Image (tube, rainbow, N blue to C red; front, side):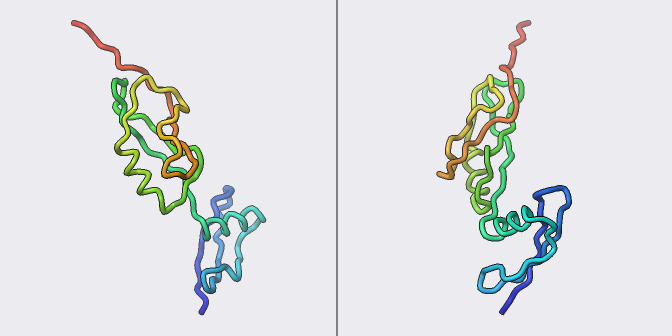
Length: 127
């Protein structure tokens, strides 16, 4: 028995709506993609969906209490929640530099989590 599914390609600004016919967990027909890159993206998205994870982690002694971070490359979509649980426990110390590694090889994916901005040390004001 075949199943129909529609995915949106985000490989370029066109945002093609790609229709799939699936049989026994495999794509047997695809239509709607306007380029070969879209076809490749949809096949990967169907079989092995991945995402870049943007979030924040706590900062000790920083001008702000949080610093934005992201995975340096996409990680498997089904691992996002586990990665968030790990990052919720992370606290870095100020100063923070853009690109600092916050977590190396998160969830054994081979992907580092890095900061996406600089964050200075909180200045103490004496009365």
